[in-house]
Length: 277
Image 1 (cartoon, helix red, strand yellow):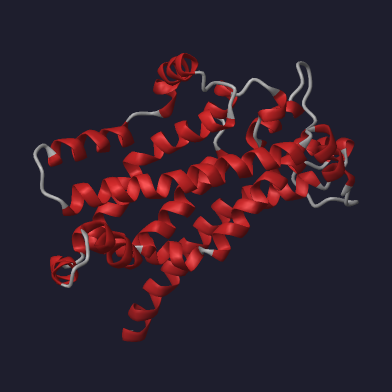
Image 2 (cartoon, one colour):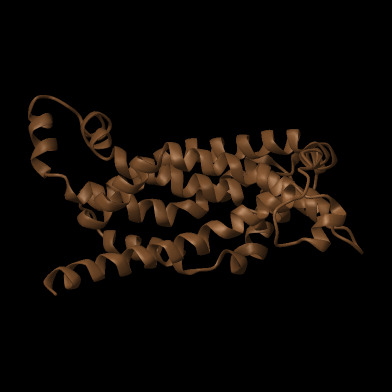
């Protein structure tokens, strides 16, 4: 009886995990299967396995959506936003978490409010600012918008790491002649590496999959990113579902690969941030 009481919670836990895994994995599996079906079979056998594998859907999606240029645009925007985001968020979080100055708490609360505001609410004001600064229809303008949108969450993540580090580390280094900036770059940042990796993955996947601002700010077809390119498969009267799903698979695969490669660091970063926060 005692063994049953010990085993039953484990079985229930495994079943719950399996249910959530199926809920999360099935849409992706269904998308891949639909991308391998013919246009006619998609409507007659929408839930089953493909009778014949139509790999030409991927070639058609790549050519029809001009995904090569869109892929490059998405890569440039994502990489550029990450390169700018990391130093901005780390410096801001370090100042708020480690330095003492007036209105520090008020500034931190003000930044946290940015997490609570939906991006859709800021669409028109953001567009007006970009228009006034000449940043609309520009990859650089989109990069700046992404970086600005990542500051609130980035500061929240990095501050938890910075405030957990002993003050004695910097004091000892400064006694030995190190400057504040050297302490930050050579001592604090290396110890906060899990938080930086968490930022890169969390925000990077968001930049890669972002549609709203990319569609709002980029009107030139040659500048559009992959999520916006997926809308090209939606016609006025009909939708080419097989090509659309093939394009979605092409868009999704890089994000999945990056996540699995960095999964260990991502989980460690979230766990460390939760414990330190």
